[in-house]
Image 1 (tube, rainbow, N blue to C red):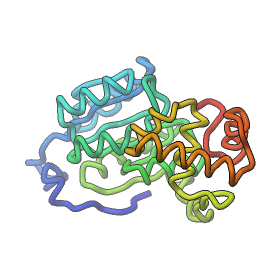
Image 2 (cartoon, one colour):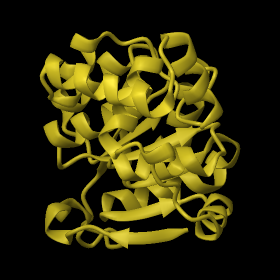
Image 3 (spheres, rainbow, N blue to C red):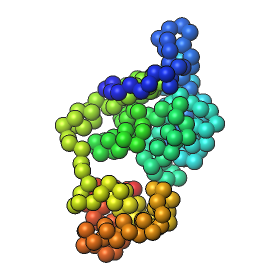
Image 4 (cartoon, rainbow, N blue to C red):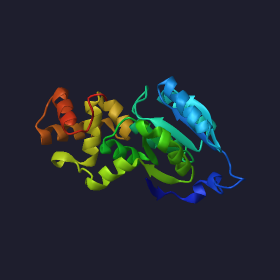
Length: 232
């Protein structure tokens, strides 16, 4: 499902992508399963004009290969060792703005697609449809165009985006999610570029608004509201 198009000036390598003089679309594959990476590599390398330049089995390697190879496209699994792929997307985009990110995942919930695209990914493909959709998503990403699994796109179109629950601000939701994921105040401050004192203030406001006092209660609330998943 094609969506928005980013500034074509940022993707000169895609000029004439259908012509004889087209440049190669370079790709970094990031998935924690070697067998999956092998299959994806065969799929992508068999496509004329595509070249997989590196494979990563964890987030740190994915970041390193993106910095080292400056690929046109990073194909990124959401469930990777080394941290949260969703949280890593903005940082990767900031460090390598020339690299577009296509998320390849088993997560079929529209909320994950919304968060991934909102974080800066340009494509969202389900693993069950990879054979049919990944090549198209990578090709569009190299042109600065978005791609979203059609079934998920239809579900997203029919669902209004959720707002902050229970009078929490967007920043308080960010802090609450990180608290529920087990991060300390200092770690939250570093991730959100806040002072520790500001994080402590947000935490106090969250507990006051929700009438919750313990981290276990906050985790339960976050799970119930869908701010985190049990497998996070």
